[in-house]
Length: 463
Image (tube, rainbow, N blue to C red; front, side, top):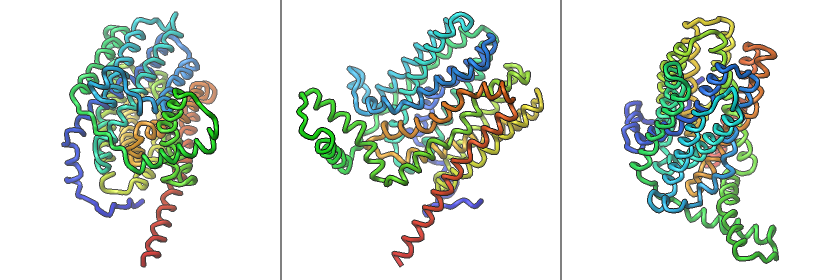
């Protein structure tokens, strides 16, 4: 497959210089704060629960905690528009919401540390939900900050820097937590992870708040939305002043971001784009939930899992993410997304092969090499794509919608992953997970053909 170059293609050496910019560097530490809680409510927690004798079926249901990340668009308008008492005046809107999320994560992790999976499984689920909700709230504000802090051409680098910090955090909260748990127990492991949220808190206190970039077009759109609601929804209904204020806020915070996106792309293209966003990571998400259990069931030790899937896997992921961030500067993003989607589906099949090999460290290393490099590349490209879909006047709300759609189908489907493995085995499951990537591949091909046809029509009309 030949990648399509951008018309203003720069050299590889020039492209790599974007990683020197201060805000790109700062994004790495926010990525660390965003990534730290993720494994602690998924793979690390699953390993803990499995060691305590919790069934795979029950562990599979725990993945539904992740639906919190997939419905964060429901409260994203609040994060986008509402100022927190006291701390927003001190830090600004984006930084204050990031800080609030970080404090909630730390509190939830401390609660989990003092709970016993054998007798308090329900309370572990509640605490994990607190961590996930706080983490999702932090994500909303971090994503808005990332998009607003730099210009569009730097979004690929910001995505890669974010992924660098995020993956270091995954290594810390998975590999690090496994080693700590093996040495001093799970309680101390979770307490140490809670303390590491200080990295994110300090970063919030150091970075500068991005400037608000509302546009005249957005103001005109909001006025049009208000006229629409007043004419066709409210009509002649008289509301009290406080109700009018609430309705006006909902129009600006919820209806206007959606109206802007659909008016900018048109109904059909907007729906196709949203469907692509929903399907792009389904294969990867569904596969990932059972991968950590596969390692345990094949007989790998915690140290082996941590070293290969964690430390070594992190290196491969960062290489893939860095390559993806630079590639976004040089090539058209849909072509890069197609390459990523094809490779993700292909590498998932490698796990089916791994499941037949037993505790073979060489095969595990090969599989992790391919999977993590491809995963880092695909996610860096996809985040840059999502960032380009947003309007800076509605950053938090629109991006939260996209990132929620990005994970919701995968999280819903993955809840039954444990049952599929128990019923059909790992080989069947990983082949099934790979096939879930086909819809995204077909949608990208459609959008590429549409883009090509549009370019040809424009060339003919201008000649």
